[in-house]
Length: 355
Image 1 (tube, helix red, strand yellow):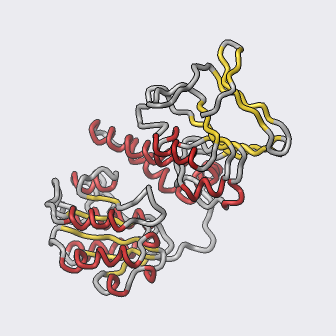
Image 2: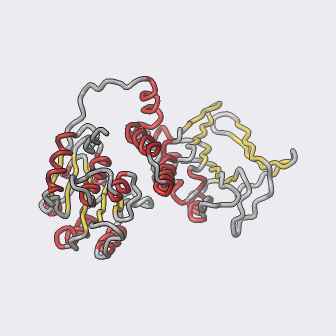
């Protein structure tokens, strides 16, 4: 039986070796900054695995803790985000500091990953300062930043910095399939492919289901976003993407007269910045009638209405206070230069009532 290759951060054998050596000396400390232009998310998972690993050569990649960390299903590794605000709010970070005092569920440590430190303003970072400096010994903090200068000097002085190497200027393509994946998924194609490979290798049914659920939860924002224009009327169709799925699309390119709300109208389907960029006259929500995942969220619907947007539904969700005529279809008749008419139809008979 051949010996298993050591786990490494993709494209970072030297940094992987340095982190491994520190972990084996129990010298990773309570906080680290992962900086540079490489795969910061992979580097954070590698470091978290090293902190939690129970094997002999950390991270071993095969112990239960390593396997769960690398598949984003470990209960003691928490990624700190704030989907409801542009920047991570002080309230979220106060919850982190409170949670840090709670003992780990099953691991040796509790690891908090901050995937984009440009979303932490000075006030937010100051909330973290005390717990980073004097927090419980079981709590560890990993800060990811393309440039570590986005962190306050008081935070940087209390952390070790691990720098990823800059990517090579010329990288060979791996073939047409990889290129297609890059076109569809943007810069995260390698990460997505790696997740699929891990999923295919997993033999434990329980972990397989957890991995599949985590992967499925991240897939929405790989949806193709279509902007159709017909006779001067623009229609934006974002697939199942939520408000974070628009990536590097310029706001001017999102402007549309008709906007299909992403993610079935769940609360994260749109926010103020997105609506300001799109500036739609009408929004369409495909809610799914059972609203299994809190689709057609009342707060999002109220937000759209408060912004003077006509609201239509392609199906018939049951919502309190929503007097929606039963219908089989929603039909838009497109005119010229932004002119359109919408109507619900049933059995060929039209309704013309927007919410």
